[in-house]
Structures are given as structure tokens and as C-alpha cells.
Length: 486
Image (cartoon, rainbow, N blue to C red; front, side, top):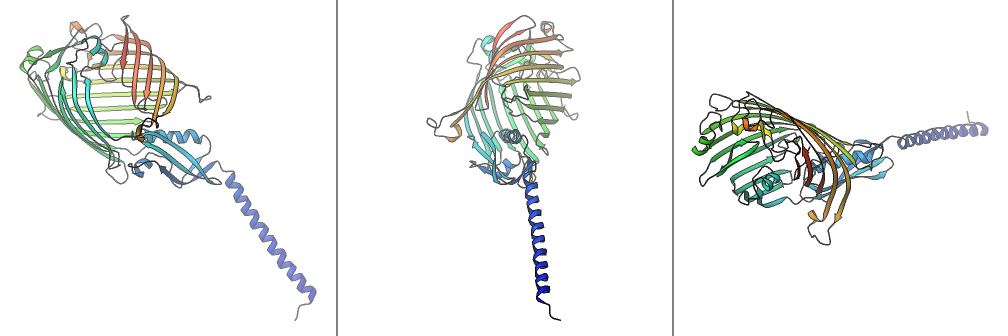
């Protein structure tokens, strides 16, 4: 039956109304979806872009970043989050400057831009350095004797093949004659979690510290070789997380001394003879979440080491050692990000068994970072020790100077420089079960030091420390250093 005109009009009106309703619902759903996108609390990362890197391959850079292509990143505190990403890349020590920026794409979609200035990677550096423990000992106790200088050439090729691999060659003459080679591969597997390092060194001395008297080193100088030493090692590293690395090292150490050294100190080597050899195993756990490895202001650091020297009857030495360093760094004002006040606290410790140790293996205060500030001129030998250091820093300034008008090399055209005033207080104790009478003044007793200083940091890697300290014995002194003092 044919439809009447009225019925046809009603049917068409129903179809049009239904179409309009479905169209309205679809548009409403689309608007709701767009509204939800706008109101999300995170950005979608469409891509990670890297610029201004000519040698370093992308995966070495991306390995350090927690955020990848396709991830979401919270809008809250995005600047501080991206600064942490930049710090992790910077701590590879491959770049002078690292910045990470969010680049808007559309809506809640962004790209991350990693902007870099690469370092100069080939360093044929002439060696002209003091052989003494630190500058202060050479200046005050060795009368600035220029014969106590090492010279030669240290050739370092960093970022080999653009993969952060490092080759080091050493030819050193002077106070200590030494030759060495080292090759480090941070990643040997596809997942970039396992690394490899190989070292081999040979050294011989015609000047040698053979004993400690009154907590100062006694040296013998000769025209003949007083000690020869050869050591080599093969190490594997495992790094699954960003901040944690495990190291497993196997090595061999051999040294021999002359008759004159043996006559002056029969306990110089473990077997009371003229030579000593041993294999060793070493495990090291390293956690490093510092914002800057050279001069940290925020984050934490932990290094824990266990070593067994001597593995069989073949070895002349059998010694078990535990050493640890833990440090925490704070920006003291969380509410005012620009407040330039920082605090650092750290603890160091060393334990060894058995108690008897040959002189060549003694650990104590006065070497590397193991010292109480104010006692830089002294050596304190022992089998066990502990140190607690505290430093309050106030940043005077931190700038990036543009040197492009004067420096044609891009790697050196930007000069980051910063200066910090500081005050500090350290306390330490070292235990020695076989202390000589002449060394009892600073052994098996509490030591403390305090003072004020100025730190100058250049290129984020070169540190100059100027310090004026007082120790428990009431001695004041001006000291100068080149390494972080935490």
C-alpha cells in the first residue's frame, strides 16, 4: 500500500531526528574525550630528539634516560624531572653542557629535546705532577723539591667509536717510572647492562717511602731501583638500574724490593722477604644518584667493596678487606629553589683481617679521600678506621661564560664556572694493633678538624679547593686540593 504524503513526511522527519540525535551524541563523546585529554596530569612523549652530538651514538645517550618515546611524563615538577635526566647524561662525562627541554606538539603531546655540547675526547696530556700524597705535603714538608715530580705522557681517548669506551696509555718517568694500558667498554651486550675493563701496569721506584715516623713518611733515594711492581686485572660490571652498578674484578699483583729497603724495614712485605705475589678477587657495589659526580650538591652516593687478597697456597699474602663510603647531599631549602645553601655529610670506613699487615699493604689516613681535614700533612697507619665529614656550602655564583669570540673549538666555547664558600667539621678514628712508639700521637685516639674554605669549579670537572683548617692538636694551616672533599 502506498504511503500517504503525511505518513511520508512523518517518516522522513523521524529519520532526520534520529540522525541528528546520533550526530549530537557522537560530537558530545568526541568533545568529552578532548576534554579528558586536556585535563590529564601528564604529557605524552611523541619522540626524543637529540641535537649537537657529532660522535656519540644515540643509544649511549638514551641509555641514561628514564623517559623514552611513547612514555608519559607528569606535568607536575617537569622542569626538575628533566633536570635530573640531564644530570644523568652529564655524569657520563661525555659532555660539557646537557639540557633537556619539553617541546609542545599538540594538546598534551610533546617531544623531548636533548641539547648537548660534546667534550674534546682526545687528550694527549703531558704529565707534570707531584709524586707526594698531596700538594700540601710537597710544599711544606718536602721543601718544594722539584726532583719529586713525575713527568711523561698520558694519552686518553674517550668515547671510542662513539660508545663511551675509553683507551688510556701511560708513559711516566721521574720520581716514579710507570707504564700502563687500560681499555674500558661500558656495554658489551645488546641490553647495555654488562661492561668490561682490562688493566695492566708496571712501575719501578728509585725513591720509596719505606716507613712511617712521627706520622710522616720516611723516604730512601738511590741510584738503583728500590722497588719493582707489576699488576694486572680484568673486571666485569653489571648495571641494570640507572644508579646501581656491580663490579667483579680478578687480578694479580707482584712486587719486589731491594736489599736496602729490606734492611731498613724487614716488614715491608708480608713474607719478610724481598718479593710478594698474590691473586685477588674484589666485589664492588656502587650507587650514585648525585646530580654532579665532580661536585655534588644533591643526591646520594654509596660505594661498598669486599676484597680477598690471596686465594691459595701459591700466594704470599692472605688478607680480607671491607671498605665503604656513604654520602648524602642536600639543597637546604625546598620551598625556595633559588636559595644557594647546600649541606653534605659522609661516612667512610675500613676493616681488615687479620690484624697484622705488611707495611706495603697498610691502609690509613692520608691517602685519596681518607683523611680528616686539618691533618693533610700526616699519615696515620692502621688496620681499621672510620671518618665522618660534614660540609655547609653557600654558592657565590654559577655562570656559563660564552667564549665563542675567543675560542674557535665548540667543546671549549662555553665555560661553566661556579664558586662556593664553605665551613666544615670532620671527626675520625683509626685503630692500629701494632703501632710504633713514634706514631702513637695520632693513632688509637679521636681526631677532629674544622675550618672554612672556598671551592672553585671550572668546566664542571676541574675543582680547586682552598681551605684554612684547625685540628685537635691546635694546629692551624692553609691547604690546597683538587678533588671533592666529601
